[in-house]
Amino acid sequence: MDINNIWNLFLNKVKENLSPMLYEIWFMETKLISLENNKATVLVPMHVHKKHLKENYNDFIEENFTEITGSNFKFEYVTEEELKENVKIEKTEDGVPNLFNFESNLNPKYTFENFIVGESNKFAKTAALAVAEKPGYMYNPLFIYGNSGLGKTHLMHAIGNYILKNSNKKVLYVTSEQFVNDFIDLYRKNREGNNFESVKNFKNKYREIDVLMIDDIQYLEIASKTQQEFFNTFNDLHTKNKQIIISSDRSPDDLKHLEDRLRTRFNWGLTVNILPPDFKLRMDIIDKKIEGHILSNTFPKEVKEYIASNCTNDIRKLEGAITRIFAYATMMGGSDITLDLAIEALKDYFVKSIISKNKIDQIQQIVANHYNITVDDMKSKKRVVKIAVPRQIAMYICRTFLEESLAKIGMEFGGKDHTTVIHSIEKIKKEISKNKDLEQEIQKIINQIK
View (cartoon, rainbow, N blue to C red):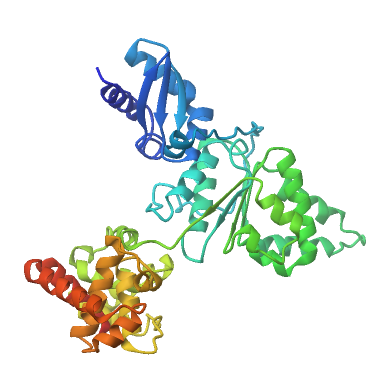
């Protein structure tokens, strides 16, 4: 039996013993690449998989693998990069568990199961689940950053809800604003003229816990006195191997108004960036958000594409667009959801985000958004298909729809000469003649421009 069949049998056995989510995150993308000298080498997608499998699943893996093969193997986990460079990843220290119940301020609707995954947030979810399974043992602190509306808060609540469901640990979620307000309360003296009780309550709340999550830490930049107290709280928890999870709209190094010692500590653990969702992920999110709605079966693909093309950086805005369309259709007496209805419903919702000095700029931006590349990519000399084809389509639209000159098109696309522009236009014309799907796709882009 070859190693692929052996590993498939092993994975089937793992499926029987783990939840679908845990299997999908930690095992689905693994591959057995060698069995030599009683050592099994397994290829994993990311460093976090290697670390987590070794520290949390190794006994489970060895036992189940022995049942299948009848032999004892020691396991080594490697990434693609390590295969090429023969690099090892560091180990981390163990944490100390604690058993308490606590008012956590968590929203139960945010879980790992309903966090929709794409390439832009896959690593963030994997790291978050690793921390949730072994808080205090894995990356500490976990620092999640990215623009507003990309899922940072969802992930934080998901970590907390997972920990509460699977342990008796104390978990506390607060915003940095709440932390500041609680700190200010320390200065309010009681009737006896002291604030001993306030200090005691503050320390009980923030230090007698197992997991502290602070959302939007960037707002501490404007509260310099509070930074000292947060520094003390951070040190106290970290020394006790208590898990700290922080979110921000910027990376630790970009929080210039925070004290250097705080920014240094934020980099002690793992820093993960959530990027804006690509077009496919935006479409998946739309499908998930309309799921179960009474009008979901009448929500055409072209309307989903219209929303996904206009809401490129904020999932909350995308959700709002869906809500407006459903509401508009209902107010119109249950009208069918069409592209025209969606455009009408959202005409005041999509603030014009494409500020262009001419129509070529606008076309470049819309096509770039549609194909998940940047305008700079389109203007570059890159010839990879992912960039070259959208560039050719944009040039074709500029010529046929705007009737712009070849010289101006070439100039606006990074100084391309007119023969390059002609070649691009003719190539798309030829493709359209034999590919009706491409023709419809280009027409949708033109409709959006109109």
